[in-house]
Image (cartoon, rainbow, N blue to C red; front, side):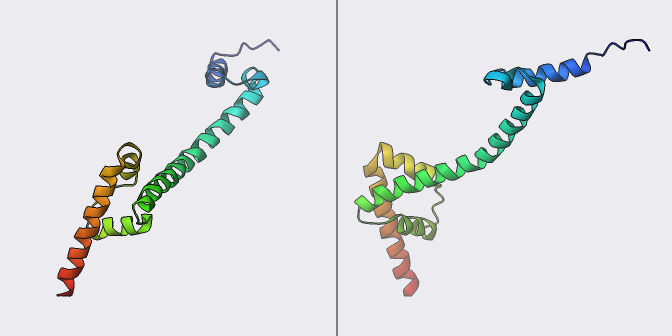
Length: 126
């Protein structure tokens, strides 16, 4: 049988994989099989950690808001409850940034919300 010259398709596929793994260390960037395995592993980790990152940031924001509201004599859960009662749609990222950059602003917001929800409570009981 005569020798068959392979086409460019397999080489193009390997080149794409090698470009993806070019920053990996050792055999993970040089050998085709280990490069393919490491690429799959990297993509799995990236997919998993996208969800984990959202979770971690939410935990961080909650911790920051809680720390500042406790200094003011309140609590995180009370602040969020009052936000929902007052129908203020603020996500946790914005108050967390306020907690770092301008604590007085967050104090003012929480005091305003507290007084507004007390007034709503009085009006509904009448």
